[in-house]
Image (cartoon, rainbow, N blue to C red; front, side, top):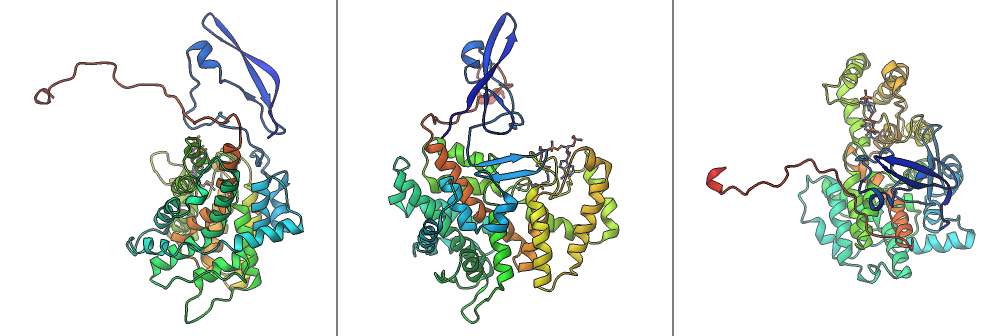
Length: 433
Ligand code: ACO
């Protein structure tokens, strides 16, 4: 990993103390003030509870410039990758930090294909869940349980085991995710078919039944693969930071990824794609859009326009741009181009983008605004939307985890706090409380 360079120093004066803090520069993006010595020198912490101004690590994997709407993996733009690469090629890029040559790609595809089955005993885990369980609950449980099945890939200090765990997670996630769906709809599990591509195999395991094989069109398979690429990694977002923090304690990779899935589930993060569809259903008709926009602006109303806004992007989310084009293609393909829900979504986007409140706050559609529409058109129920996100993000989580473990300076992550609770007081006997 290339080391960030010290390019300057910042001077901080607190009372009668002055400290010099190094300013570090990476290859692109804002420079950072290195405050690691601050506590030792001043007895003070920095305070940034939602990490608005805090870089938690250095990384070579993904670069985002939210002001102009840039997303790149290993230097390659997301537009180039979705146009020219396959999802597995992008997985290789994230794991190895370089694009594969043909021989490397073929070998990687073979490896992933050969790991798609899950331990037969993991099947039994599904039946412990209620049929009405959210598939994300199943996903967290089954991925966490992988720690109990694949003991030969949980030694985080062995590079070979780290790589095998990475391959296993990428390869088995479609099977685990498809089975989470099958379980909740009461259909038999469909086993992976190694003659199919990654995306096709996932669609097959999700939608085929023993009585009838599902045959997706090449356009749907390509759209699915593109969606996986678009969700593959997104630097230090909430779920990735969770994975890094869990991993920093030395926890095994399967447990770490389960923690990332749990964080992704929330509606402010990956759960937003499900929330977008629910919101569109709630709005119901174009004539109701102004009423809901007013609600989104009202600070006393918890309603927010789902699929809008982003901590980093203060411009169009570049993934939303690619997805918008894919949405047209998929809707055409499945004959849903005139879907009233899509019509409603387009009108909502148009009105919000012209509204002063959204313009002033730079609130643009994010990836979740369009992904839900495509998922619905392909035939996924809303409860599966976040599962699809988790499936695709698994490579990002594991690549970031691997990068962290391979950093020789890695230590356990341990934030500090500003204590605002009571100071010491006498313990009252229970009868006096
Ligand atoms: N609808 C209405 N107002 C919004 C929205 C929204 N979707 N998003 C932000 N705002 C407003 C806030 O109320 C705030 O207004 P104020 O300055 O008057 O107080 C301002 O815009 C800034 O918003 P914050 O909440 O400070 O932004 P933050 O970076 O903390 O939150 C988030 C980002 C969570 C994505 C937020 O925009 C949101 O809740 N969006 C809806 C959920 C969503 O789509 N999540 C998906 C994120 S992308 C992903 O995970 C793949």
